[in-house]
Length: 390
Figure (cartoon, rainbow, N blue to C red):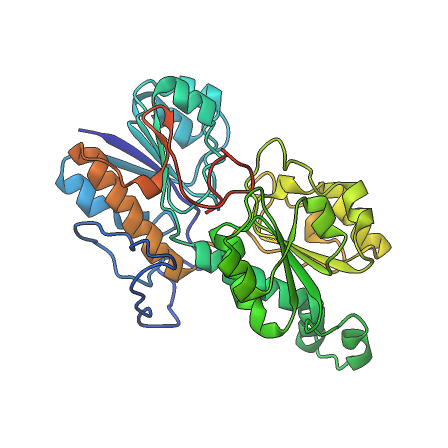
């Protein structure tokens, strides 16, 4: 019998289940590039329902308990007395989410002698200390591509909302006002602007494809150039460094993984090198930008807007300065956990668990660390040799 500890975000404040706006989900046949959708042997949930919160349980309980396994689901993950920490001693599997990360630090991994699988329900496994996982022979897996398009759509929405000054304008309408001049004095057309992405992996390329119809000039940077046919199709301008891209565009969308080269990449120096009134969208990781430098750049007008879906730590404290800085479009980490995405990453989580519990190979696309060895991937990455930018 295996013990699976699943850390998910709390249920809706109004109660579970919520009232759903739609009765079903559109059907898609596969991912761009040919990767197949998650393919578990069965599912015990209805696609389109809230699966990512505690009561949703990723639809796993019936499956696991029917096989005699123990499932613990909690949102309590902070501090040595948390429910997560209390169960680490005999946990075989820990499931977490990028949106509500259970940080598997070296100290926590040391307290989990039976741990064999660290599984991310979604994409982005930097909440797991990979060096410790490798040293212990722990497999680290995530549901690659399950919510990449979800994040790309969110990034495009943020770009438009910043440039068109949508959120402040909506607040004026919501509060009973009709202050047109106040709305439009910070509103521009995206058409004709230079827009660049930092890291052209699956999400970055999806953003570029979705922005092309807006008649913008598209730029990108990555350690590996995209194939010539993609550059020509999207009329892309390549930049060898993030620094060069940032000073030549009006909008930057960040999609790089977090590692030593990208921590505080957007510091005060880089922000000040950008065109005055530029916009930054960050759906990657919060620590890629200098928190306080972003606040100062917005207050001075050097940045025209900043929209982010990622924070550090997560969840962010109530007094985090990004909640109240001017011209921000911040959201909790929701871009990759739409109800549509949840159906895919819940199915992928079950597929990985089926393989793990049956002793059969987990599909290569899902592996970050394979039983103590870095797994190879074919996806474009911002840093050569680093984990894929899914």
